[in-house]
Length: 153
Image (cartoon, rainbow, N blue to C red; front, side, top):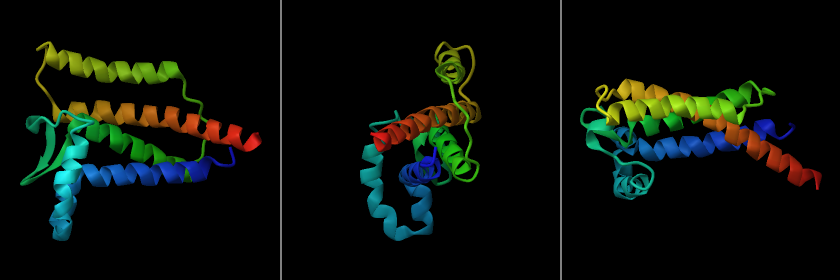
């Protein structure tokens, strides 16, 4: 567990970089010289998200490069990584917990696709946020365990 904080810090900056990429339109409104990155980042994001315009987070005239659910996933991972830097824990996330949170997100997707309810950016963002938190806990524990095992051998 001695590598926990360093690994969480590295993962935090990796996820922060990813959030920078998916938020380039917002960032370039503050730093216009970065607008040249938009086409490249947009193409990169098209590999991880459907980018349906009606599902993007929009603050006129700017929008995210991924849908609100994907944005929530990355935001959840960032929040969990940030918390992990300052609040190291011996929490052992189970695969069952990850599946439950994934089920919540899947229920959101299926209920919309089956026409049971209308699409809600807020609900999609929240389901992504919960899944991002759970997935990050699960993945970061795997990375910490893997690194610890390498150092032992």
